[in-house]
Amino acid sequence: MRLLTVVGARPQFVKAAPVSRELARQGLNEILVHTGQHYDCNMSEQFFRELDLPVPRHHLGIGSADHGAQTGRMLEALETVMLAEKPDAVLVYGDTNSTLAGALAAAKLNLSGIHIEAGLRSFNRSMPEEINRIVVDHVCGLLLAPTAAACSNLRAEGIPELPKDAGPVQRRDLGFIRAGDVMKDALLDAAKIAAQSHHPFPDLPKKQYYLVSIHRPANTDDPQVLGAWIEALKAADLPVVLPLHPRTRACAERFQFLERFVPPLRAVEPLGYLAMIAAQRDAKAILTDSGGVQKEAYLLGVPCVTLRTETEWVETLADGWNQLCPSPDLLWNCVARIPGNGVAPAAIFGEGRISERVVRCIIDWL
Ligand code: UD1
Image (cartoon, rainbow, N blue to C red; front, side, top):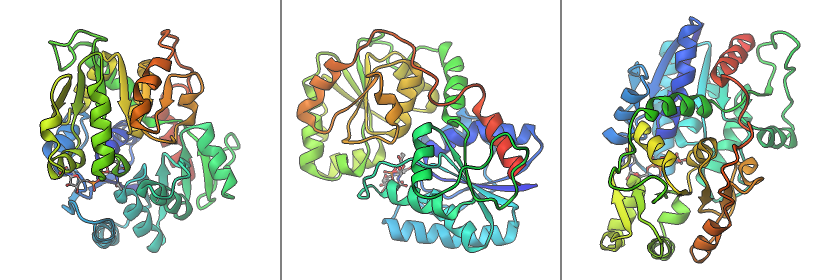
C-alpha cells in the first residue's frame, strides 16, 4: 500500500511525525513530499531533525509567493509527482496552502484524499486557512476529525459520519471519523524529551515570563494592528518572550517597528519544536494567535490567551484555560481572567495514542 503524504509548513511537520512513525511500524510505504512552503532552517530542517522525520523523497522547493501563485505552483508540481508515484491515497494535514494543493491535486487525479485535522471552522472566511479547510474537506474522501466540534461542523455541511465499530469501512465511502488529535501524540512525545532539558531562557525563572506567538495576517499585516499589539505587550508586568515568525519579522521590518522590541519585550528567532515546548511549559501564560499553540498550551496546562476574535478549538474555552482577546486594549484584562488553578484539562483531544487510531482508520478505509 503506497501512501503519499504532503507537508510544507511548520505545523505539518509536527503533525506528520507521530503518524509517519506509526505508518512505518504498520508496514505502510509512505512517500513524503515537502512542498517547500517553509524553507528557513529553523522553520523546516530543524523540525525534521528533532522530530526524526524521514528525509522527503520529493522536495518541490516552491517557497513564498502570493496565495494563488504559491498554491498553483504546488498544484502543478504535486500533480507531476503523483502521476509518477501512483499512490493508493494522498494524506494531507491541517489548513495551509500545501494542504489545499495536495488535496486538490489528488482529487483531480481521482486519487483518494485523506485529511487529518478535518472539520475545523473559524466561520471567518477572511482567513486564508478557512477557505483551505472548507475546500479540502469537500474534495477528500476520508476525513479524520480531532474533536467533537469538528465533527458537528462536518455534519452541518452534510458530510456523513462513517460507522466506527462496524468493521472496516468501505473504500470510497466518503465521510468522517472522530479520530482525535495527532498533535497530542507529538506533544506528549516531545514533553518527555523536553522534561530533561531547561527552557531556552535560563535567565528567566519558571512562571516568571509570558510567551508570545503572533503570525496571523490579520494581526501582522496592518501597521496599526501590529503596532497596537506591540504597545499592549509592552505593558506587561513580566518579561515577554516573542519568537518572531518570519511573517511577523518581515512586517515589523517593513513598518520600522523593530526598535520597539525593547524590555520587557524580548524578540528572538523562531524556536525549534523541543525548545518551544519547554518554553511553553515554563511560561506563566501563553499569548498566541496560532491554532497549534493554543492546543499545546491546553495540553500542558498553561493558561492561554488567544489573540483573535474566534477560535477553531472551541472546547479549550469551556473551562477558562483559553481566553479570546479580540483587541489589544483588552489583553491584560483577559490575562487576569484566566483561572490558573492548576486543574488538569479534560481529554478533549482524544484518549490514548491517537496516531495508532488514525493509521488503523486509514488501513481499514484503504
Ligand atoms: C502558514 C499557514 C498558516 C500556518 C503557518 C505556520 C497558509 C495560508 N498559512 O502561514 O496556516 O499557521 O504557516 O507557520 O498556508 N517565510 C520565511 N521563511 C520561511 C517561511 C516563510 O521567510 O521558512 C516568510 C516569507 O516572507 C513568507 C511569509 O513568511 O512570505 C509567510 O509565509 P507563508 O508560508 O506564506 O505563510 P505563513 O504566514 O507562514
